[in-house]
Amino acid sequence: QVQLVESGGGAVQAGGSLRLSCAASGRTFSYYSSSNTYMMGWFRQAPGKEREFVAAIRWTVGVTYYADSVKGRFTISRDNAKNTVALQMNSLKPDDTANYYCAARIYSGDIYNSDNYAYWGQGTQVTVSS
Image (cartoon, rainbow, N blue to C red; front, side):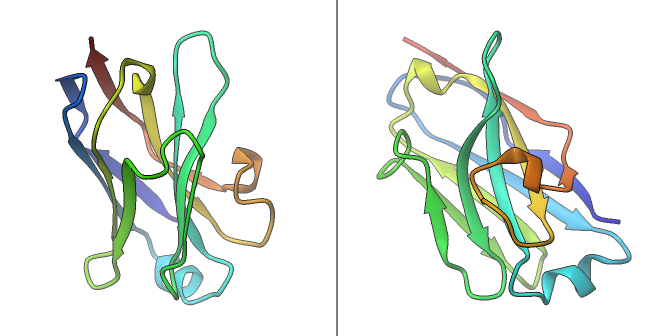
């Protein structure tokens, strides 16, 4: 089992910044996270819309992946010692308003597909006003 707890959401004006954090824990986390297939990702879901991929990072080597809509504005990073993954969000736009979820992918599979992520946090709300 892997438990994920997000923090750092809030309300900000367009052009502002927020930093989300996700803490991972659980008795099998160390085992899973040593695998080359283990990835941590961020997804978001706005009201009336499907959940969409935002960013992901391969835990062992730190390779990152981004949705086109956030490239150049968002940065995903991880701290292996603290078992945390962060999403730094700059130049925020009203379209970024959504509930943001941290997720963990254990096995191989399309990193952009939420179905391939086995563990999820409870979500944290990000609201960007114009």
